[in-house]
Image (cartoon, rainbow, N blue to C red; front, top):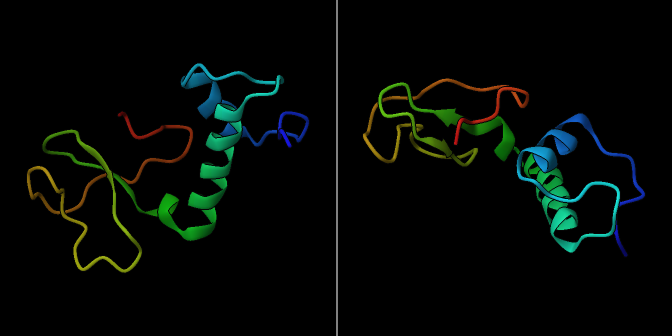
Length: 89
């Protein structure tokens, strides 16, 4: 069953638009994207998004990660973008 008739959150709408996915019409790809957004918000992954200040890599760390260091360059931590800012990836 398609989710296209269910109201979009602002975050879902922004994400669908930025990725060029269909809005308002049946689309399995859009449905998968929306389910992924819901999962990320519920699981806590959305709260652990970083953008490395040193190399610019956007990455996510699990809630129970031993370190939040950048996996590419090893710098410690990074910016925590809000959903409207995106991750810059």
